[in-house]
Amino acid sequence: MAHLPSDADLLADTIHALQSGLTSLPLSQVMDTTEAWQQQFLQSGIPELQNIAREIGNFQSLLTSQPMDGPSIGRSLGMMGAQISDLLPHAPEDRKLGLSQLSTLLLRLGGELEDDNNGR
Image (cartoon, rainbow, N blue to C red; front, side):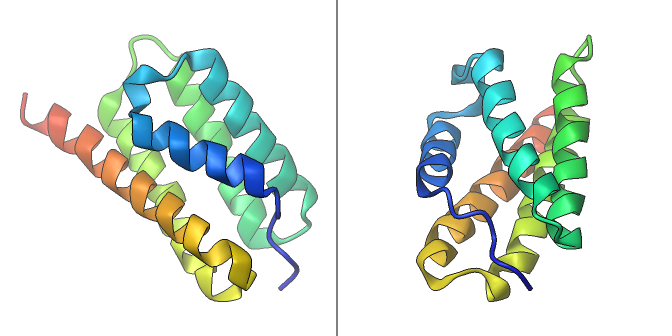
């Protein structure tokens, strides 16, 4: 498997933004960040990364649809978290911790979104 995108700043910024909470982020920032990831993944030539890029596209569509569908957004975040988790064994050593944190955050936030709306 070829190298995963190695933009350490993008990874760190994404983790920090997610730790702040999804609702604290301006939609424009979310779209810019997801677009940066999507372009790297699409251009990678790696099928697993291109699958994540497709899910990013789905996530972007869900964010811009009205009304927003929280459970669907949650499922999309969870899907990306699971896809990233599956890539961890192939990740460069200097990216494993960050990617693991990203995966955990996506899974947690996705689960919270699904649970919030199921309880209403």
